[in-house]
Length: 137
Image (tube, rainbow, N blue to C red):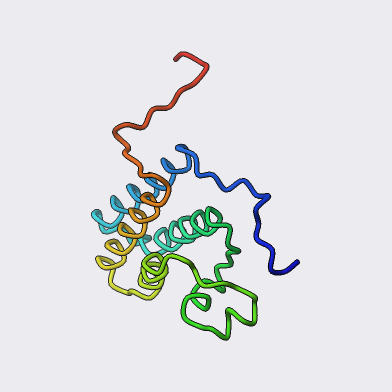
């Protein structure tokens, strides 16, 4: 039972979810550029949501307390019955996002991680994003 994957969970990433990820990135870029003091707090909250979305999409369990151990420690993976994250580049970017201390480098890592995750999800272009509603405004 422990070795079974989570195939019964709907892991599709909708265009609305992609927009949410893009919006988080856009907000974070604005905060960075304006030098907001709460940048680090919002950065880590956004990073958690981004990683959580990615892990769910690949049907891997996610725990904020185990993500770094999953990436760097065979002991942690064995103890908690985790598999390595299949995409090495994503794994490296997650680790960089977590461990980088300089704000400029945090932004660069976060932007690259978001771009790579979008690529996995089939891309996203906000200029082509269109919300359709049954209600005409």
